[in-house]
Image (cartoon, rainbow, N blue to C red; front, side, top):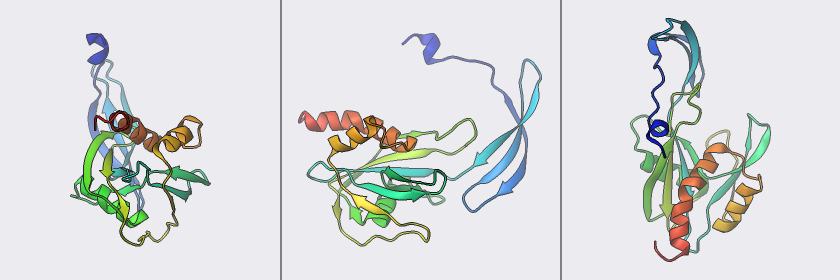
Length: 194
């Protein structure tokens, strides 16, 4: 990778005043003024101020992934996903992942670690989604859904999940991010190098 691509430096807009446009139970919407340092252009941009999220790759001892199928209001459709949810204020992403996995699916595991973190939509959102791997997961408890949740849990093989992703049956972008970050780990496990 060329150094020009690895570290491009276009002009950085300067952040100014901020005002509340809307507040919801899930996120706040703010109007934030930015000024271009060279052109002097000033614009108000909409920023969604949301809490950080966590999504969990949960691997069973027999190399299956814990998946959830649930109705999603934004798309008005069902969605196959990895477990996940909102990180509580001050909560560690790995601890949040273990908690969300247990609440949504009843599964708990032995080893948990952060695979990586992504910006869900940096054009308009200021939060991060942390992608956590929990290994050796087994069903240890009953599900504890949030008020508006109803979740079907399944545990297809890892290769089946990647097949669903490649065929377009898994469409949630953050789930696809998690599978991308898990791919090298899965390659090591399959080759016996894990």
